[in-house]
Image (cartoon, rainbow, N blue to C red):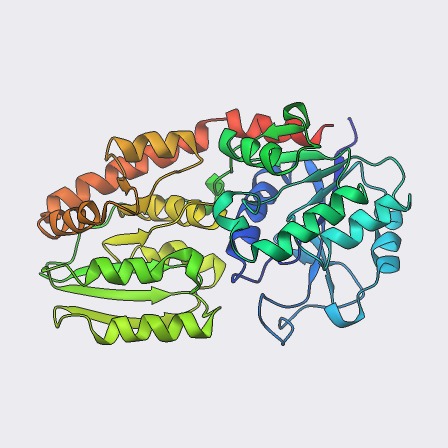
Length: 390
């Protein structure tokens, strides 16, 4: 029998964390789908994003078994390049996979070790996770511009293999990094959860005039909760709106609270905090609509989770997953509009408020079929196998 490929992953955040969803969800799905044919070793921090406290029930200084995968947790205060090199020498991986671009805790330390020839000739794959898109680059642009110029001068990112999840991200990478050619970028769209996680059975909507909406993302400007609240302010249908997700930006949350206080009486809002990774789908299934107006790794995971939970989605263009994007354009799984088309978001919610229980059931069955089709579509899986077999 051929030896399994060994991949050493460096990701600033991983399970059981859930705040840095744009990093955690895409990676956990890759591992979940390919762990039977690839040996993954994951090196990550011992705490969630924006948290000072380490996870409960983990061990430092040894490998932990998390869902059948070896995970090594590191205290950020005592992290050194030497430690990362020692772990690399212990595992002797066939491939190194970096799950972030601007991460100065793990990604940059690994790249410096490589630059100093401490990692041999091991191929390095880097997944930017949408960090090189125009919308993400605008956040802290001056600091990022200076870093990009410095990194180019030091040849820190030279001769890498780049993992893009869409053709749009391939273009973002080559436009931002003029030393990267299109041939260096491999496109492999995000994977979704495996069959082992199951698909929620279609549910019948509770006989209530109140429409149950939810938002499930970090509370920070790029995830557009401000926009969601501005749309809800125009809705006439009775709404029970639940907000899930960590508060990342306190000032932004204060602005959102002011908008919540000004909402009309027909909109009742509740903040429920974080949703653990393993309960996202069952939590979404308690609602009638996921309102998630931003694309990217985190949002697409939530969209797939909502579809698997049998509820429609309301989101914004563009969607990097081609099949999902086409389904939304045809209103098969919900609705996707430009953020400039506020009236379209309002119309979609008002229309959903008029759905009968039978319409909700038909949609849930339709969503189930789509989910099974996605699970049986092996194209994305094959592209990931090719990506790691460099």
